[in-house]
Image (cartoon, rainbow, N blue to C red):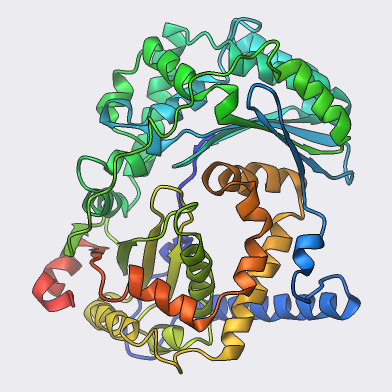
Length: 504
């Protein structure tokens, strides 16, 4: 059970001592990581080229609309979406439930309680009245193979078990009992509040925690940052009651706000039959539609500002973060495709943006990202820089941004390569049924809708320079942003960073 939060993985940098910085000088292992990245990109291009040559990827216009989708779906009479990912490689099945819930539904009085609810799912219900009996029931379904887990994201929460496929019907009944009849025992809730606070403490011990919380407050406003921070507020978690858990249940854990995903060695027809038996309208009634009633209020416009925080425990490098409000899924879809393509272009190791920062030694690594969200997806630049290069790196990033729409900033080849990389990512994410069902599919179902997913690559292929320029001018270039910086307090004292010096 864990929190799902977008963040680039630069954790390996903590293993490196702070180098004596000079332009163009890198620790050998950092060069190796960049070389590995370029090798991976090259390998993907080779694989895609081979698949094209064999006819396994059809590149003619409109061909993807004719290809078989990686799942089949059906909506039951009570509004529950049933999605089946059929894969007969191993005799296992994943039984999963996904709710449109998470940080985006949480005002301060409920901040962090979607995550607490996630933990309470595995405790007890009317059919398994204690956690011990709950876990014994799961073990009976899978023996030593019985696996259960869950994640809480900003816009969805998912719960799943992995069991032998011969026990699929029993697994569906098990999950049905858990989702429909939770008990929220007071003593169990009291214990689990402290488990959640333990996760809070571990997050708080991270060196970048202070910056993360301060950035969320600056980007989304102090009144609404809880809608983007599913970790929650400590005092709210400590004051959670069974009545609050039941409120969440009746608002969001209803069939017309959920999906049942079955992935693995299964027959779709049998899945739909069993789904109607264990989750259908005869035993699970729909509730009042939660949206748009419980959508977050509109986020106020960003005020351009500098946020500087000392890193907990210190850091041998500087973390630099730029953040903007970006496009929203289902509202600004054309810009979401352009965002993905552009981020992929400038994240390639041979792109001008990378050369200006990484090759010159101003950053160990730099990444541009857009996080797909229905309720305003953030656009970020993350850079990890040598401490003496912090100011120069920030000014270089700002200078490069001003040229992003120049006709020669990236080549047609780089544009085409980015689209092929996104296509390769989409192929790769469906390779393992369980991973696809528990990682990618819940996010797309909850935030974008299945239609968006099915036509994603077709729309990516249509992205032009004009589309990218429109996206950049609308959301990034000339738009207000928050600049965040964190490193050791000693380094911050020496750097003497000011808004007047850094914000353009």
